[in-house]
Length: 268
Image (cartoon, rainbow, N blue to C red; front, side, top):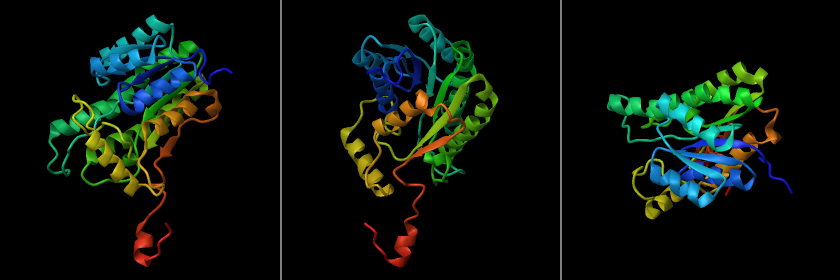
């Protein structure tokens, strides 16, 4: 039985942990070879070593054009080309409200979460053109759809990813390049933790508990939930899908629980 990504080469940013690592592992299981990119060398190298010969590590900053170009060059050197791009790297921060958010915090969030996706497209599209087409996937968020108080810069960055996805999809559809994004709900990953330290198991469990309260399905999302969606968008099974923001949020944005609270009706 052949894999769904046999013969494909994928570049995944933020792949040293969380959703990115889960996706890299799943892509390789499905036959792809993967460049694992992360801002921290130890994470990238650990992920690539855990995956095996089908993965190589690359350390860089997605907000820097030189690093992004070097990332693609490394993928070509290792595997001969690029067919799939997953712009997954992102950051969160304690922003406070719009008035009190420091300028440097706003700038950093937009630089990584939005500029990083734009650079991933800008310097990746020529490689997909040479391959005769391909798939670009980016990580947006339910925060790009719903306003969430206290993280306005993050909301703006993810809303920008959704708008960029739709515009770019129209620009490159004729070249056989499909461009989509995924809008996760509350996923139990390290984003928002001390990004340079080890994952705190207690903090991760608290995330799962909060996620269970936010999602009508009654649980937090896991990295594999997003990886499986990315696999669909990377594979030929989604050959007629482009310009879409695929929401994977356990029903968060679809179900308004305030109605149940107002009427006192319990549907659990």
